[in-house]
Length: 192
Image 1: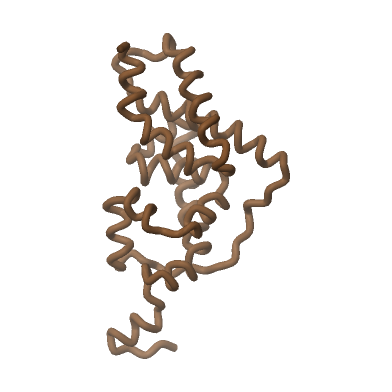
Image 2: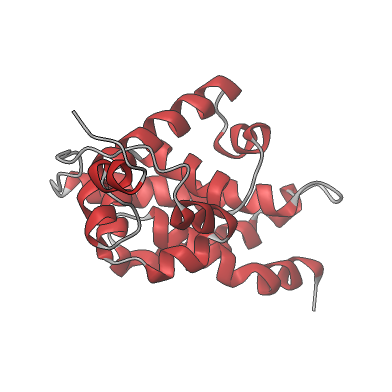
């Protein structure tokens, strides 16, 4: 088996999860993934031996997701509704668990998380997924997406803020985050 196919085989689940989470219409995830692998295979001569295969492949996957999402947006789907407000969850145990193993945490979450992710812009979602799920550095994300380093930080900040707004009620209802009044009561403080 050639090196390219071996690399794809070893990481196919990781790559597919990225496409599935980054695509607005999950029913086309298989097609987008297949298209990306085929495009990568056809251009494998452009891959420089010794460079970061994952980053190179993520660039191709991301580009294929952008194209597919552009087609989906032409169908008129609205993904930019914002309604909820989120409180700071940094000290919450569920938040700590989510940052240690985001894949496991997302598997436990309901569809609300997926819906909230789909409401982010493509660049915000791509930056978040590459950072939190694939653990790429800011520099690597900038290279994969071919955008400036500072723009990566901006997209991450905005994406996180939108998710906080979108997921407040869900986090409270599912027990992942206590309401500020409950925390204050448990600590013996009164809320204003």
